Length: 168
Image 1: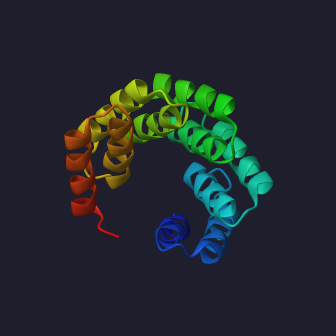
Image 2: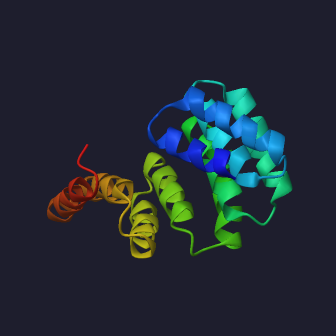
């Protein structure tokens, strides 16, 4: 698992090529390590290898069919590549598997925002914040949704909170 853990750090640093090397090494040693498949998929997607990324996401879902993370990470990738229907389906599966995972609420909230379902987005993002109040992205996207709803004062509070958490 050490290679997979370092891969996660490398993704955080945006060193995707190095992360891919570590995740592939982790999978040589432990082919059924779901988090290595997920991490490899995320890194591959970031360098534009969507086809290979989805093969890894699919492998993670097959290996861990009760893993909410496997489904919501694949849903995130589908959302980012324009497959909103597929993303919605995967978020729903993830939500049934683990409604207490903030990543599920964050991702579905982002999808709802893109679909201009601002009420649904605010609801999901609020839940993500309740579950994990230190993810700046939840505040940022909720701030955008609040702006579209004309709730500028609330939106400004969310943007300020996001900046406090992660000012970059």
